[in-house]
Amino acid sequence: MSLHPAKDPTRNVWLQLGFPDAEEHYLKAEMVLRLDRAIRSLRLTQRAAAHRIGTTQPELSKILGGKFSEVSLERLMRFLTALGCHIEIKIGAGRAAKAGDVTIKDARRRAA
Image (cartoon, rainbow, N blue to C red; front, side):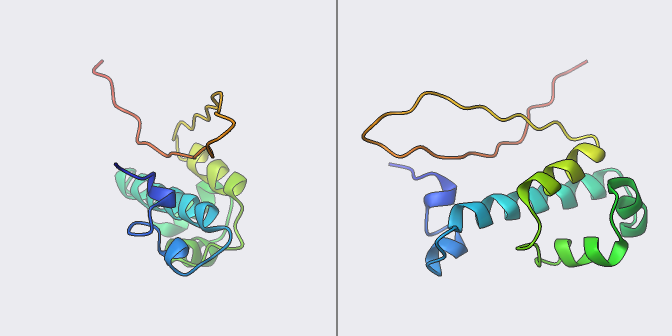
């Protein structure tokens, strides 16, 4: 049986440390990883990327360096969309006896 990564203590350090909002920290970390990938794939400097997403280079450097606890999920989403990323949020019906989960997936690229 495979656990959802955000709830899997082997993949979620915040869960291992007992953070009450471990899933949110995990999601932010995943978004920051994708932010870093987007910047690299666009071959942007931190300064150019910061200008494009509407922040400063020192703040972007801090976020990419792992200090993002004060940054909201919404702000990270705005950063990603400013770099051309597509974000899709789906909410499905749940089961009364089972907790739901949150998943982040990389979109599959379609051939042109």
